[in-house]
Image 1: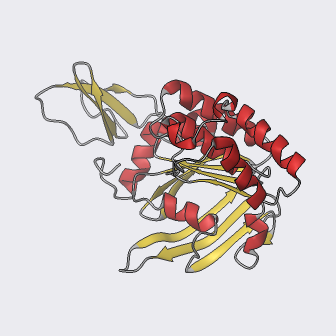
Image 2 (image 1 turned 180 degrees about the vertical axis):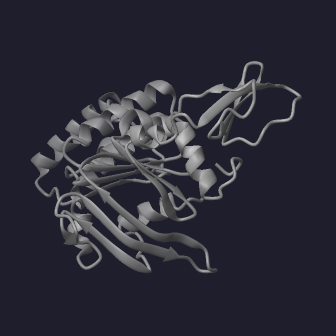
Length: 295
């Protein structure tokens, strides 16, 4: 692979039965730290995450972790992988501590003392020590997501993949979850796949935007927004009036905020608009031919 430090992806493709092309040539270099993967539903994010987690094989391409060819040696990655999918089963009748201990054993923690110490440490890390004795099926949505991250962190993974991790969480739970991810990213590659721009903007040093199975934009948040400065204009369109062609439409107290991409002011009612990552996201999707309602 081209780098011996971090995650390398080259020419990754995947087409499902029926001709659905989920991945159409993905190329990425991801250094240790938090890396965001943004895209609307159907962009191919989950397909990429499942492929990187070796849950499915690509049709073509290469994946490397710290210089090791993952497709030739999937065991190398699996021993160093933590994966938090979108959905986590509730496991009726099973106590949280017992379930996490079982996962630790499956991850190779055969020494009982070491295993129990790690389990208790993980419960404390995700702020679930007080619920370790409860059945997992009694956990709230936020608690279940935190339990999932505890499972993913068993064995101190080198690569941590989290797929739509904050969907359905309240603001306090999201902030707590973000702190855990930022802590892990100090020593690992953390891939955060989401359609929530704010999560990526607050956490990730770099990001990629996906649409139709390809990477349509990549870089630091500031890099993506700086490209748009001086080209965006906005105005609030009162309710009942015709909306102009826009890269982003957002509800406002008195109507709809329309953000337009133009080299010059498109009309006397428009004001210069400072580009945000949300704007860069919608511009990238528009350039890729993804309609605003799809995003």
